[in-house]
Structure formats: structure tokens, C-alpha cells
Image (cartoon, rainbow, N blue to C red; front, side):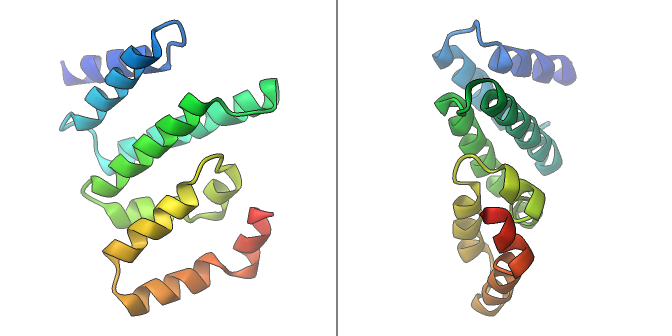
Length: 137
């Protein structure tokens, strides 16, 4: 079934014993399946942020492949059926605080293509509010 395929591709992707090229192929295959909704991609992003936090705790750095997977997932989130949901998620204070790659920059770049100028300016005011800027420190 599709769920079994999704689970196997995810297991292959997160298995550090699988070659990096094969892991990347598993992630790309997973993301093109029609069963991947915006909300499921956001859950995958969250799981990769958890992996990044674990790596920071254990090694004081995030592996480049974890950062790359977050970027790939973010790109997919913006090409899904609900890019504004992805935008709201990526600009939330919790995600900004977890960001180990350039998710905020990717989100702002996507916002520029998704929103009218006035809406974008209002969104930037919110994104750059004192409480959110504090998270960036």
C-alpha cells in the first residue's frame, strides 16, 4: 500500500547506514508521491529539526546532510497545495528558534513570490516583530 511505501522510503532516508546517495534518492522519491500533503511534509520538516537538535546536543554541530534535507523538504513544502501554510509554519517563533539552515531566508524568498507587495510588507512587520527578533538572537 501507499502507506507502507511511504514508511519504507522514510526508514531508508533516516537510516544512517544507507549510503548518502541512496538516502537522498529515498527522500526525493518520497516527496514526489501524491500521498505527500503539505501537512505531512511539515511533519517531516519537524522530524528533521528534531534530528538537528539531537546532532547539536551530541556533536555541537548539525550534519550537512541534515541541513540539506531540511532545505529539500522546505522547497517541497512551498511547491505543495498549501504554500501559505508552509510559510506560516516556517516563520513561527518556534521554527525560527530551531532553524539550523536557511529556512527563514527560504520562507521569505517564497513569500516574495506568493504574496502581493502590501501583504508581504505586513508579513515582514510581523516576522520582524520584537518577539520574533528575540528568537533570532
